Each structure stands twice: as structure tokens, then as C-alpha cells.
Amino acid sequence: MELKLKQIEDGVFELDVRGNACPFPQIYTELALKKIGDARLEVITDNPPSARDLPIVLKKRGYQVESEKEGDHWRIKIWK
Image (cartoon, rainbow, N blue to C red; front, side, top):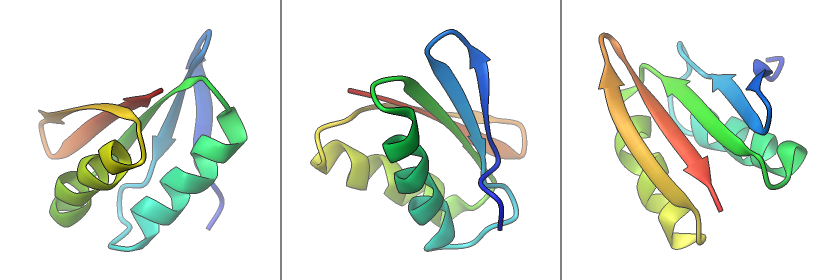
């Protein structure tokens, strides 16, 4: 799968992983974080286990994380 990563504003990128089940949202998120450096990343997922587990894993790695439900998906904001 191609990494659906796009810049949505200065210093903020969006990664759309809807339609992907675990572990792919986490794998794609890690790839995107490496690619964007210190910018903020917003991950969009429709996979409930990913919405639950991604924030836990990322917080353990030292990231700040906010997650909110938006209709049929979640938006997970990640930054250092």
C-alpha cells in the first residue's frame, strides 16, 4: 500500500489508514513519523483496535497523543 500521507498545514501532516486492520495502521504510522521528523502527525483510522492501541504504544515511546472520535473514524494527533 502507498503511504497516504499529505501535508495539511505548515508542520502538520495527515495519514489516512482507514480500511486497514492491525498491525498495518501502526506500521504506517511509524513510517510516517520517521518521514516527517518533528512535525505533528494526524492519523485517521476506522479500526477500533488501532484507535485503542496506537495511543498507548506511542505514549510509551515518548509522544504526546490526543485521540477523538469523528463520526465513523478516529483522528489521532501525535507530536513530540
